Amino acid sequence: MTLPEGFLDRVKAALGEGGWLSEPSDLEPYCTSWRDDWHGVTPLVARPDTTARVAEVVRLCAEARVPLVPQGGNTGLTGGGQPHEHGREIVLSTGRLNRIRAVDLDNDTITVEAGVVLQTIQEEAARHGRFFPLSLAAEGSCQIGGNLATNAGGTQVLRYGNARALCLGLEVVLADGRVWDGLRGLRKDNTGYALKDLFIGAEGTLGIITAAVLRLVAELTDVQTALTAVPSPAAAVTLLGRLRATFGEQLTAFELMSRSCFEIAQAAIDGLDDPLPQPAPWAVLVDIAGQGAPGALLEPLETALADGLEQGLVSDAVIASSLDQRRQLWRAREEQAEAQRRTGVGIKHDVAVPISEIAPFVEAADAALRDAYPGIRLITFGHVGDGNLHYNPLQPDDWDGAAFRAETGRVNRIVHDLVVAHGGSISAEHGLGRLRRDENTRYKSDVELDLMRRIKRALDPHDLLNPGKVLDVSAPAVEVGHRD
Picture: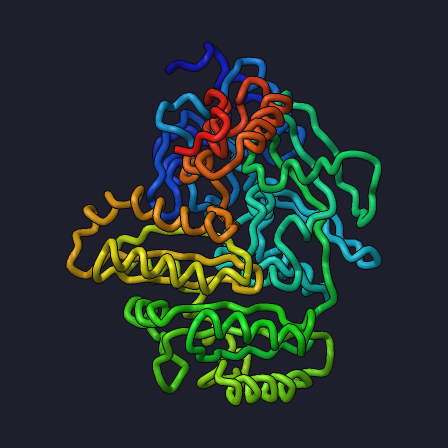
């Protein structure tokens, strides 16, 4: 498909020197996903350095009816940030929108542009004696605009909530090139619809986030980390309740990992050892954090884990005695994506169920997959405190990787049918992108899908912003009651 004559020249002129890329070698990184499983084609990557230039590029695209794909750090996992294969979309990278605009310590907020790397925000908050709680394995390269566009979660949702809960205001370029300035650091505002919540989690399909006001919290002065061996997910959920009753909001992270997580991490990652003296079927990584004197939480944590031992909820535990050991305890969890990539073909699931349903879901899904695929390796880990599990079956040892990948649809159907049967969601924090777009229509109600399409058509009537992601606006209405 060809673009309108002179369109690319007009976009380049609007961006100015250094504001665009067009050489094939320069374009390739923007067209390929981090896991190398999504590929597309684009004639141009726009790299605006101001909101005004973003708006002008979007205005030109609207005028010429040329679709564009917003892209942050390109760390997404569902194909939401890559162009399609037809080559008629341009990519709009937010990487040069990388300024920290303001820090307001009285209001405990920081105002940043969309291209600021998450780790940079964390470090800037720390320089001011504050803490920005959003924490992800990709925090050294992911950008806050993408975090907000996917409503990212991470390891500390249990205490602080996901990206939506940490955002007070947004600046957004709309599909026609207008700019909505909602950069208000208000915690209370009942003057109409909560517009910012339309754009958070919309994956760039309703507008392009260019800046945000984020909530900061008091600096954590005491953090205690423990790795505990538990006999089962059910025991982990019970332990979670006991720790919540003891520590309240000081319980910051509670990460469940199956034994297989440690096995593949040890085999694939240099220098990673199992900190537990004896192999355990399941383990929980716990963070307790507060603003008290350093070390003040150590004794209460020791007491709580000793109680867990007496009650049969914990069979062993290791508490980090230094920052270096704390980082080492977290390595098996944080290196899971890389370990799985090196181990073999996995079929990834980012799901959520009510906390009370975690154990029944895992039991049912494990049994169903082992029955369907004898020898399958089940990699289960995630944020038990908010019900989000990464449930990633790996190919059996005697299977060819390509053959197992061909089973993706059947495996997804087994897992996701059980997720929904247990009151859950097929996407907890990675978004739908292209990966889950069509599958989502099986599980969403007709009313929900209709509302989503109405919102999309109202804000982007020509389907120019990240088209083909999240939902298919051209799909016919699903007949009432139809789910197959």
